[in-house]
Amino acid sequence: MFAMIQAAGWPVWFLLVASVVGMTLIVERSLYLRSARVLPPTLLNEAIEVSRAGYVDDEVIDQLEQNSPLGQVLAAGMRHLAAPREAMQLAIEEAGRVAAHRLQRYLTTLGTVATLAPLLGLFGTVIGMIELFGAQDVGGADPLRVAHGISVALYNTAFGLAIAIPALLFHRHFHALVNGFVIEMERQAQHFSATAGARN
Image (cartoon, rainbow, N blue to C red; front, top):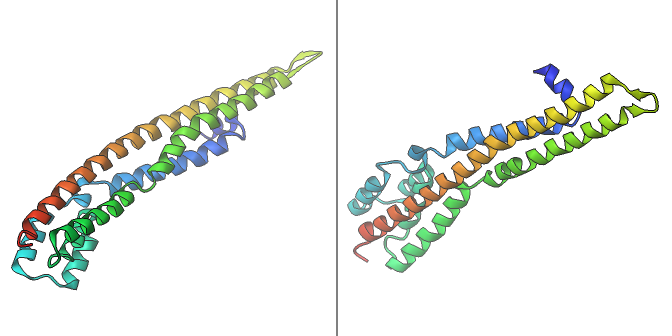
């Protein structure tokens, strides 16, 4: 592996940084964007039961808010149980926008890695071609310099694509996942508003 990096020349270091950033973001988002973590399956029913039983206080709301992104949305509604339905729904919508923003965190950076990696690979390819043409002189071409120029060009192209393809796949996967989570959070929040706040 180290021999391949050496053969790719100095432009590959930019690609290595991009690969580390991309892999870190993919692992972090994979751990964060788990359905059980974002939308705990029993949380809605528990929040409705607590609200109906009248056990709502600041400690309960704070625990709910720290539970998950869905908990943040439901906690906003729980804070407005005594308010008119419209006020509760506005609070839920605002909390939903904040939760959606947090779910989308780092996705722009991952998309940037997916877009930038092929360009960095192309940059390395150009550097390799420059070295390749620089190997030509009046006495002919230096075979070692020609081989080095070709290896720089090809390795950087390959590394750029190898980084961009998974980054793009995960970027689109995470976007679809977040969109699904947001829709489900909206559905559960509306159910909470209609059920727990039915007396309003």
